[in-house]
Image (cartoon, rainbow, N blue to C red; front, top):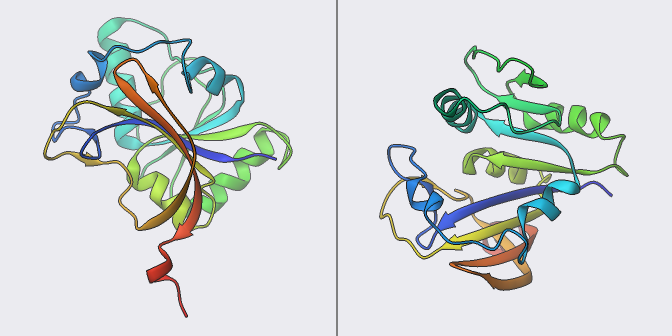
Length: 189
């Protein structure tokens, strides 16, 4: 069964990026790329991706600076209310509005509900929109030993989660959670 997974890294105080959208704090962390909850094993089970415009622009800008190619061969949806330039050779689909329509298109791209998983690449608010729609199944997070004090929040929603797995991967605490839904205190009686 296809799951929607938010796979990301965060600081100890819950930020994805600093106030200037920098990930310098992340790039200097030591990680075992074959270790617990590693990217290679994760991406092997993914069939389609979705990211917000800020994440897309960050990836695109870094590719332009480095001269590297688009890193994903999978169909990628970019949620944006603005018109953004595409990356040549990338399988990009720009979308706006309710994430339910994008979710349906992503499921179709992976062969239906029995296909591969769907990855919310970036944007805590975008992951929150999937959670609001009842479509976010899991959160896999690498917690770095860094405190920023401000920045882009990990997941700006009030959710109950169930811990499924937790371990160390070099500098990180790596954890996988099942999304149970809105906080019990916030659910209608």
